[in-house]
Length: 148
Image (tube, rainbow, N blue to C red):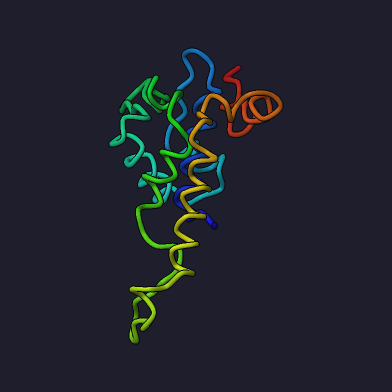
């Protein structure tokens, strides 16, 4: 199974926010630069994560992004399900719909495999993903330069 770029970046944004230090609140622009994605794409991702209650975004001076408690403890399997949507693994529709669609054993097998993939991610949380050695590496990605 291949994740969309949206889901990939969303998970990495959550991981980066999970390692922010007390009082640190990177902006969406800073997160976009750290993840090497266009600001507009990062803004859509942050808006979706905020809508899901995983990220808090504060505007203005002293504003920025922070991970909520729900974001820190969110199941990776649940997040991937939510961000990827409920579509089939393979496309059975199109200009000429597949005549096997209603009785296709391949489609059913792939659907079970997709659910097994999600289920294998269910026990993992965002906090689990930033345990060493990953967390310490993430801290240096996109850190604000010292002011002084």
